[in-house]
Length: 321
Image (tube, rainbow, N blue to C red; front, side, top):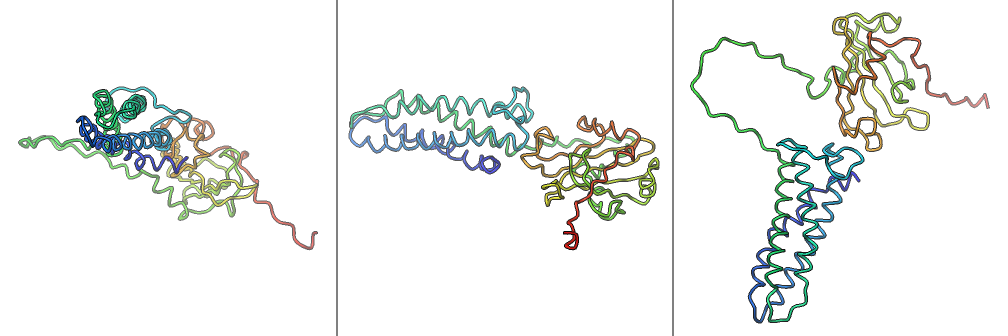
């Protein structure tokens, strides 16, 4: 399904091309007289190609919406929305595409009616074909708006006004990714080898700590301010650490209050139920997804008695067999 979802933009070009070309053939087929059959063939060919492309786009569209978290997991149609946001644009795009699919049936019927060689394709075919072409182009236009969101137009320059200097807000260096947590290998490793942690989704984890936290973490004491502890994870594979990396967990003590971070840059499709359908999860601070984590880490470090000691099973030596 991910492959189909990524091909949605490519498949959508077929119905849009039909919407651009079909009106010309429809107008050319309105003249009664000899030589009309080739124009019938062009209209019918474009109509069937447009229908096949539209059906392919309708199949790949919901998959693409779920892949880019524009449609909730488990749904085929986006939730109704109003306004100018991305949710409203997705809903309008889906509605217009559905109307276009419904208009395809009478439009194709009118273009494929039995006609004599000297007859035109008919006004009915012209009207329904033009209406269908309009909805195809409208579907392509709204889809282009989703794929290429416009940038806000800057305001016109005005005369400078002297105002009191206002300090610029602090730059959030980790707005897109937890930079310090991603550099966890530069910290001190707490685990010599991965241990399996049921509290973290049954994944294999290794803890890493900065100098302020390492000794306190090992002794099970309260983490001092400035502490940083990161858990790198690997997905389980048949009871052993697999090759696929899992999410990154980070805990930082800012004063007496712990700040939690959950980062999963690329969530596998079969694990997205854990992230509410998100293909990329970056949760921190007051994100509601971290409520379960806060229950264990309200005071910083979790209870040392709950730490996992489930290590990788060792193969028996040949002398023991």
